[in-house]
Length: 347
Image (tube, rainbow, N blue to C red; front, top):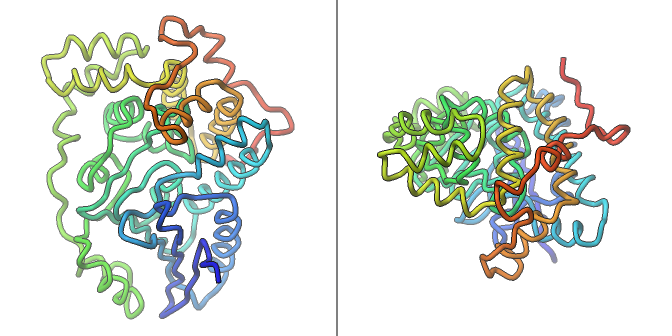
């Protein structure tokens, strides 16, 4: 008998969601979203459920992101499955952000892309010493989505711009410093924490089993990060990084230069736009436009091919350089979709 991809359990007033694709680090697909969304609605209305708990099966992580191999094949074939997946996924991201009860996300191990969308919009976000959190989209010719640009744009200073353009991984301390998580808990305390949720309040369980987070290396780099990434263009950001005296800045420049040029420029525009937005829903509406434009782009298919399918790690980006990316190339990603708009309520 095939194991379910998502498991639901109710015990002691806690509704537990377990992402259950451990061999794929619980990568999220459309079927999983379609199971989680109605269950979350049901628990919101169920007076016997006080708290929702999100965990991932296995030892490797909560969720490595969306099922990008499926996205690759859909994009190559000109299908519509990914558009439908993203629409329902973004609606779920918004529902998580406005969930009326404690929603406790255990961001243990790998948490990337779509996994961030399921967890970092929660009202209670827990990281451990094993946490590795990132929005790595520009590395596959894509743009941060699932409300990621909303979170990145609200990180202190320019930390979010650095994270988006380099695809740098955050550890627990960095995730808390950047506003992606709230509490640090040693992984050895997790099972005891789950039991405490079933017998008491979330606040009491947090008080008993969380600890002060280690010092954040990312926060300690604010000086050179803020100076470099406050520039208006990716080219100027790179120039400032290259001129910086910080050794880490040179590595950051090299990381950025390996990414999709058009994805970098679209991402910077998305981040600056998200910073001015009044709500997560407004950002998700725009991210949906950008994501659908990405689906018909050369770089998304090429990036997934190079990084995940054939794994030669040598994508042939087009346009090939930042200088080759025109304003029209960037603006295409933000064009209205007419009747296909996401249309989440933004009030």
